[in-house]
Length: 293
Image (cartoon, rainbow, N blue to C red; front, side, top):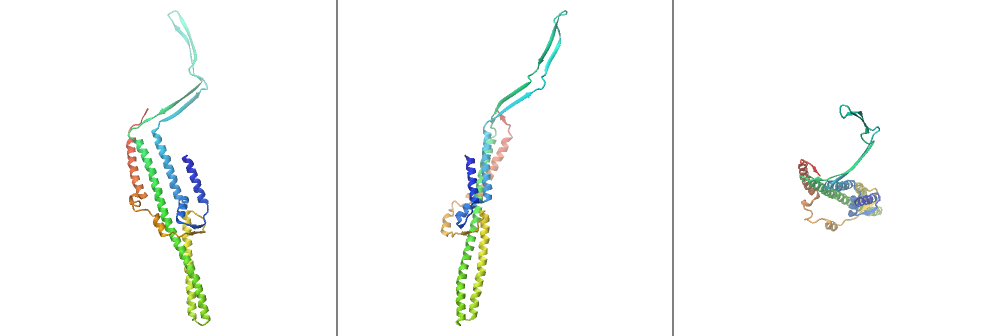
């Protein structure tokens, strides 16, 4: 059942990674795409699955082991005992002796079942199981820490992209208004109501606004390409969606849950220390002899 869930989850991730995305992109949706398409998270998730399997493997040391053995031996020539002679019963009577028989069968088949159950001395197996369980928790904390780091990087890129996109849009509006102002200034100049310098000044402001728009548009495209690379997307037709400040405040964790002790990075280091302690106790138990019955 567990392997079926793993295969189904991998199939869903494959579909999400291959499906193109276009249109407005919200920050929560971008985070979902990040968690579904990021290769680092996929590798870390495979490490979590490997740790689960390792726990089952270590726990198997508590159970008895059974082994079947079988053998077959064939001889091309049978060994034989061949004796000929006489056995004296007394000084005058001799009894003839003749022995000619095989010593073993031509073919020999052997087999059996061997069951072994170790006696648990020194609690080394207990500490091995505890070490494997803590190793799984360490990977879980590292997975959460990786999600936090990638989410932080995603948030910075998203808001930088949104700001650059809004800046380019504002410059576009400014160009439209300056274009109307230049046309009006030229009309006033041709009618003699305004000097030529005023019309040239308006045209210069329009050209400066065009330059600022191009720079802002290039900046928005640059950040968008970096964001697409992080999300592992190929469609460049996405646009940002405004993310209100109140929504951001609601999604922020409370003060008690954001304490340093609850940070997954710090928890991972604490679990590594506990895992090392169980590993040391495991080594102490391995110095004792192994007894089976």
